[in-house]
Image 1: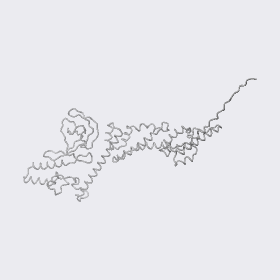
Image 2 (image 1 turned 90 degrees about the vertical axis):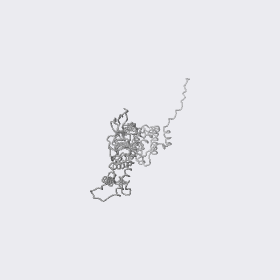
Image 3 (image 1 turned 180 degrees about the vertical axis):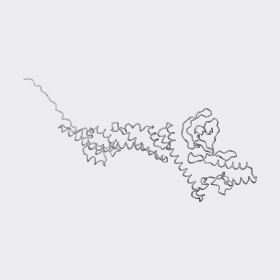
Image 4 (image 1 turned 60 degrees about the vertical axis):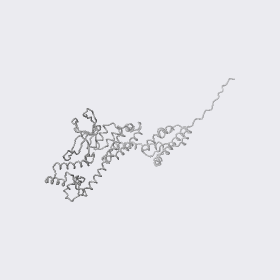
Length: 419
């Protein structure tokens, strides 16, 4: 009897069913996925869906890359059906109720995905182009609206930056991705902001471009310009209201083509009448126009009661009172006020008029040059403009002095130089 080799066969393990794993997917809740509500939330929703569904083995089914199995294996077919149902479940849990008609109309996960991408993916490109256009076409027409313009620019810039931040290199139009780092750079933000300003702010643009400022410093400087413009507008409004009131009180009837003689002097005061005739009208003219003073001088000359030197002393006193009561200078092209008192030194060594007081200069234009003073020291000149003031000489009436191209040198000191 031959030995017969007995072979003990171990039991064959039952095939692992993938449907068991896919059935567990029905217990997953997608409440932490950002819900799709429209164009603004589409990018975040899509990126989260790709990350999560790829980990669960559902991404290829949702996007239509994985097709139904062609074999006769029932487990494989059931697994595919279960995973497709999980894709539908994901879509229903993570889309807003307003989008349900899209889901019910398409039914198949891949068709639903295509419909949502077509609706919101294309709109995302349109949104980028619209935001791009709105930002670079933004213009300030009236500098009085500068404060509101800065707020509007910041809003448009923030939206555009956010759109570029979510751009991906694999996008069909990847311009947002390519501009991601550019739109956050200070140089880009400053250049874009300055390009929106009107020509009457060119002086501020020149000052900003000459200095190495950050974007926050630029916006702070422009906000300061807006605040000063508003304050100046309020002051001018008060001056106009006062001038109108004073004029209407003393207004006389005239023909349509004849202006009242003292219309422009409604705020002028005559120091001679105010001193000698306080009960009479001493407004509307100055001492140099005063008929009473001229009549008194003429009478004294005829009677010999006072010398010509005495008359000049009277005039000098009136002029001194007028200069002491003068208003400070205002940097405005439409207003002409003279500084009350400022020290100007004659310096034959100076090549130009110079001052460290910007308030004295009308129509200050920015520049950046070096000037050399008498001790061979170089100082920085930051601008130039015109200065007007009243000069008083002994025995002479005050005279208006106009200095052209006066240099603004902040480090010059408390005195101003005449060349």
